[in-house]
Structures are given as C-alpha cells and as structure tokens.
Amino acid sequence: MPSLKMESGVKLFTGIASEDLAKKIAASFGQALGKVEHYRFSDGELQASYEESIRGQSVYIIQSTMPPADNLMELLLLIDAAKRASARHIVAVIPYFGYARQDRKDKPRVAIGAKLVADMLAVAGATRVMTMDLHADQIQGFFNVPVDHLYASTIFLPYINSLNLQNLTIAAPDMGGSKRANAYAKHLKAEMVICYKQRAKANVVESMTAIGEIEGRNIILVDDLVDTGGTLCKAAEMMMERGALSVRAICTHSVLSGKAYENIENSKLTELIVTDTIPLTKSSSKIRVLSVADLFAKVINSVQNFESISSNFVV
Figure (tube, rainbow, N blue to C red):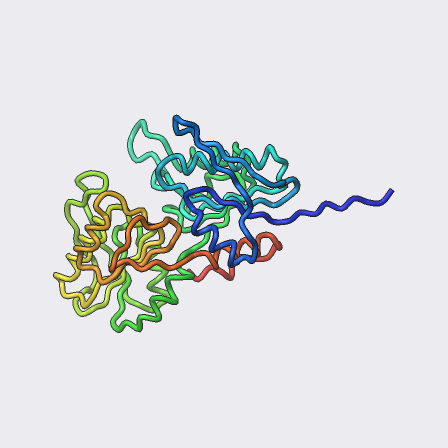
C-alpha cells in the first residue's frame, strides 16, 4: 500500500474589521484571501462560515480586536469554525490586541481583561497568536500557545531617519512608556525626555511636566497607541511652550476615540504617524499612516517555513 503524505498549505482569511489590511497582507504574501461569508441575524448576532475547505491547512485569521466587541467575537467564531473544520494549525493574526490596557488589577474587584481574552482565544482553538506592540510585553505570558510579538519600530525608524531632523529627542508621554522610548533613543543615538502626568480620571490628563532638555529640540513622542489624543496634545503644547522646535508623535495603534481627530487637528503636533493596524474613520492633514502589511506577510512566511523572525525586530 503506498504511503500517505499530508499536504498542509496556507490559507489567509479575514474578519470584517481588518479587511483592508488583510488584503494588503495577502497581496504582499502573494496569495488571495480565502472566502468567508459573514451573516447577521436581524437582532445583530453575527455568524461567520468558511466557503472553502480548510481541512489539514495552516489557517491564518487576520482580525484586530478594537471595539465594538463584535470584532473579538467574530475572531473567536472564525477560530472555532476552523477548529471544527479540521484545520491543522490556526494562527490568530491580531494586529491590534484589544483589552491590552487591562493587563493587571490596578484596584480591587476588577477583571484582568487581557488575560481573559488570551484564555478565550486558546479555548476557541488558536494554536498560535501573532500581534504587534502590546500595551505591556508581559501579556505574552498570559498565553499558553506561542506568541509572535512584532514591533512597529521596524517601520517607524526608517521614517524617522528620512526626516533628517537635527537635535532629535525621543520622548515618553508617561513613565510607563520610558522603556519603549529609551529603545528608540538608543537606536537613533538621540536624547530622551520623560513626561510625567497626573490624571483626573481615565482619558483625562490633569497636569503634565517633563524631565529632560526640551528647548531647541525636535521632539518625537513614542507610544503604543493613541486614544483620545489628550496626552499627546497636552505634551505637545507643554513642549512648544518650553521652546521645542517641533513636536511629532508616533503611535502604532490609532484607536482615536471621542474628540481625538478634533484634538489632533487643533494641537501643536506637527504630525501624528500611525500604522494601519486599525483603520482610520476620518482623514486628517496631520495624520500619516504607514502600513504594516509587508511586515506581517514576511513574518507569516517565516513562521510557515520554520524560519527565525528575530531579524524583523529593530528595537
């Protein structure tokens, strides 16, 4: 009897929220997206189904999990469907990992949302997770499956170098972002500034000051995400008042909720540079978008061929 050989191919699929980015990733990878049918019942309940066989395949499901919660639920449904359809490997490609800000108990009787989401992904059937610029690196430890944690610095650093800024200073918008800012500063051989802020409540900055030299410097604020834009706008205003030549911000994930677009347009920021892990809902003259599609496609190829991905990490 002839021996049987299992052929495991690669198939890329996407949820509704990340369709544009997924198309770019698929094009860079050199393969069309697989067919998924999305159906909503009259009450809004979502159903997703694969319209082609995925038995024995390595399935990569691309979906960011920003609000609404339907985006996370759709990803979980697609993972579960792939498991029940006998996919060989199921990789959740989550460019923006929602609920990452809930990574610890910062007060009594609260959930650790990031851990809960990690557990849900594993129970649904994900055998691997691929994501970018988690709010806290230790979230990788919440998973019991391999996590490929990519860094947008691979994309941001060449852009910063292309600006040819003199007297460059990298700034952390808060104490928690000092590690990230320090990594950028070391790579760029630049000075560093740390902002210290006090919040009146979540998403509302009461006061801010900075530690480090600002006058006569071109400042670049570095953060993992921008939500309402309050911190960045207040930091830019404070730095310009203290004699900065210019203030820019680079943030991987453009959450941009509430009055964020208005805040940024009216701010002292020269520009805000983000990636397309989350699609913009409006256009803005001050927002520049750099795509992460080529990076994700390259890493998917490396993972599929059991190659190292560490060469993709700049800082």
